[in-house]
Image (cartoon, rainbow, N blue to C red; front, top):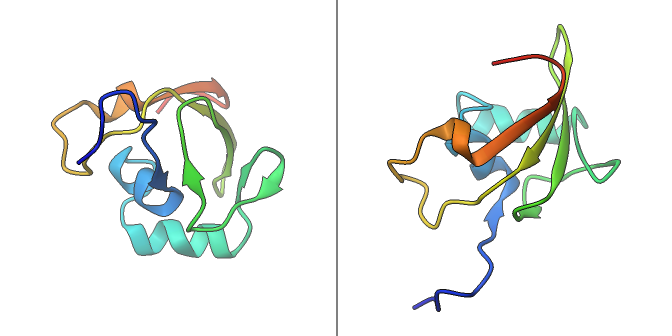
Length: 94
């Protein structure tokens, strides 16, 4: 069982799906494998453990979007709104 003060981590491919930045986890993994998503200026892997404060650059077909992860849910099926998990820094609205 987790203590209340332990930082929460989640795989990047799972976070993209939970935050509704990708429709399916497999779609997120494909984008990560193709190098279209960066974390800290480097291509990220699907297994990368994201945490609050991480910044991602996501290259969609029509635009690039930079986001900052504000929180990582404890469980993927949380009722929290997906928009509360991240902040768009550059690249438009969703």
